[in-house]
Image (cartoon, rainbow, N blue to C red; front, side):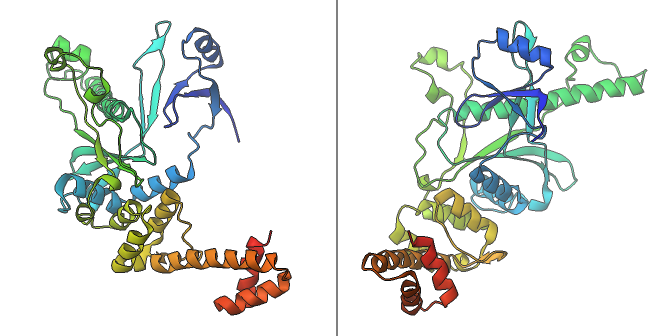
Length: 364
């Protein structure tokens, strides 16, 4: 793996927040010397982070415009198909700004969103920016994390607008009249920003018990003061916190993913839901993979199969559990490996090849 000494980062918390600087070797030494942040620095590859399996699978799933649009249509419009997948355009998920530094020098701050898209109007004009953050665990500073993402995106818009005006002034020396304040800020009185909406998807059956607003994170302060303190609210979809009726507002395979996660700790209810809902009999493979990694279900399906019958996959898990018990019993009473393979094949109606594969897996 090639190292780039110009990229350094320190891991702040378990959630994956990073402080990243684009620095020279000399800057690295000076920053380590001066900063109060004593976290260990790591070299990183040029193209970014290393993601865990849950991060990779859920991010890839949410990149699908149909799934992305469905999440927002459910949350914002109760399932009405207002946001059209074909009107979504992907954006760079890296946000960079220079909010603070050490020794008077600005240190670039870099954040990686999970998925970010622009919502376009019918006239192909940008209307707003939508972002999704996937969470497999509860983040107890989520209002700060998301608030930072959104403000950095707005700051990026201001910077890009200023750059655009600067190019225009160079190309048109006469230019239109602007005030000194507009010139210095780079942002004109008539300029507008695209609103940013971030939605958190919580892939767990647990109830979210973290704060959803900044105000919940502050200690008690008198009301007269708090009315002047800016707030930020987290937009959250947590299957453990919403009813089955609300989950039915999804129109894509995200409905089955949320249903499965919601009842993943209630096996009896899960079997009822899976058997009753025909969509589980023909679930797209990518959705099945999300279910697998977020609930540790170990669903089995053939390699390359694009549609998965979740009912059959669950039965396979149950059969494997019974086979494991049989192998342990046969071995304890003294049967040989060959005899055990033969007996397992006969008992569960398997071919000798399949029976051998299963028996050898549990023959310890």
